[in-house]
Image 1: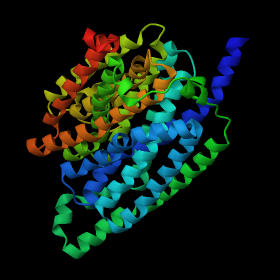
Image 2 (image 1 turned 45 degrees about the vertical axis):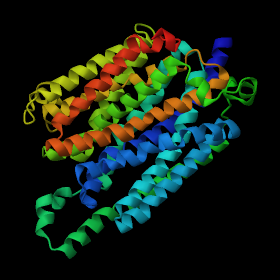
Image 3 (image 1 turned 45 degrees about the horizontal axis):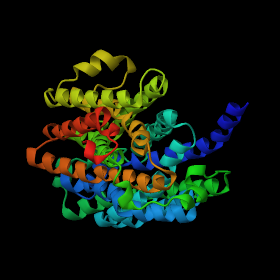
Image 4 (image 1 turned 90 degrees about the vertical axis):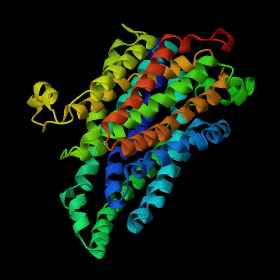
Length: 441
């Protein structure tokens, strides 16, 4: 009876958090379609286009520690509501950005959206870890990740349907043939397509804020006022936890690899002439969803969190090596394995980028419980903020990727950046997560 009661008491909080994960997954993975769109609408280079990820993910570094302070003062439920309201503001900022076609305004709007997501991520991830047994935390986070990445499948499809229709008229060759007035007018019309979708998004986020505010979402004991009062924690004290610090570095590299896999595939597809380039992020997310489902089945029944993490890293290295050596024009793998779907074939190199989604799926849910293991209740919120700061990898590593793309004259060689990222993840799985003191390294 006690187990049934505990399962029931976790159902409502997990449902509420699940809705949040779906929504901020939808917002996050729109970036993959937004990057090639803004490259056309604002006439950007590859490096400038990847400033989208910089503006969005750098918010996690700038605001993570202030957010942890806010959450200790307000509680996690109110913090989630506040995060959603900040996201509403960010979505509304897209309207003046779209009507003026000023790229810097788009970047400000993305930063505000990222700030709201920092509040949500900092509150929801430790919440899911602490709401049940630690040994099954990876499964609960996998469920949330499944919802997050399912939104990543849906978002590019919706964006393509309502924003990226009839993009053939906006090719570089045709735009170059227009006089300056006509080109500006056509690009302004293209940019204005963002107004209605982001108005709708702002409305949905506001409704979700009301829903969370009215929901019976309790504070977990470890995160409540009693836990905070018993033992406070400074940022310097959590830096004495090697498994936490190395976990933050792991997440930094992982998120960089994840964002490269999800947000560069559209521009790479555009470079190779793939017709549905705006939907390609959905391919990466679909493979991530399949990885999450596999993780829910195998962890912890057949695989430990450490083994799943190590396997993910090895797969990432394998896919990167295959991508670097592949013929960019060949589509044989898709034809052999997926022709039955009726979907137009994509080049093998694009498929390998999408398959990074499978190798990435179990990294986030495995790292969180490993990194937070051994932390006291008072250290949990500060430690979570440090892990959230690792999301800055999504700001800096894709920007470096964009630099290499410009320097190499194309995307393929730039994917070499994935290899050191996965090798460090492998180190964390095999050794880093087990280090209990810096002197033992």
